[in-house]
Length: 248
Ligand SMILES: Cc1cc2nc3c(=O)[nH]c(=O)nc-3n(C[C@H](O)[C@H](O)[C@H](O)COP(=O)(O)OP(=O)(O)OC[C@H]3O[C@@H](n4cnc5c(N)ncnc54)[C@H](O)[C@@H]3O)c2cc1C
Image (cartoon, rainbow, N blue to C red; front, side, top):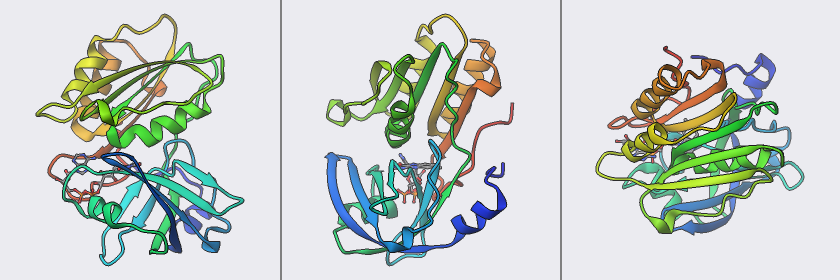
């Protein structure tokens, strides 16, 4: 499952760049927005929709993938949102991050999602850590687009505005004992509009596979119309960043 970045971009994106934390903001109780910036971002390629950057967590040898929610090439700043899901290295870093901290990052990487302007509808589904990518895709949709968002979060306080020019219908579902179960149930039961649509789906790897199979087998969607990502896997530390679920 290699990323499809061309070789020149690949080599620049594999180099670590030293930046600093510019701003830290609590978006919700469990979402921390961190803006990273510095001259080292000169020449950083514009991230693709739903692509990722890799952050070397300071004081550790651990690298984690996050969505470059916004990249400002003029100010040389990248904004990420870290979802606090427990006592993990990434969550600990985001909780303690403060302006002036030095951080190494590399990227951008990942295949990215290409919006089909001819799609009759867009289904954007995921768990809390997919919200930055879903937000990115929503902001790329034209005013003529129709989007259905299904997002699984812990509780109502984790819901947030989803700015887009498109017509957006959002369904927020609550996580239960089994992460992703509410998301899967909601996707299985949603009535999709007529016509050929496009899907962006990102969540726990096993849940992603089950939803992907459902969309192909039961809803008759073309695999080419699906951009699916396993962002993490239950019980696995630092799950690989290139699980597109294309084993059907
Ligand atoms: C392309 C891509 C984009 C991503 N974008 C974002 C983003 O913008 N924001 C974000 O917060 N995350 C994002 N992720 C997910 C993030 O990289 C993983 O959740 C990562 O494992 C977090 O590292 P950690 O140190 O918190 O947990 P780890 O040390 O990797 O894992 C510790 C334990 O926590 C579990 N775990 C890991 N992630 C989650 C989770 N999200 N929810 C519940 N349990 C979990 C693991 O199964 C493991 O048992 C993205 C992943 C990919 C591949």
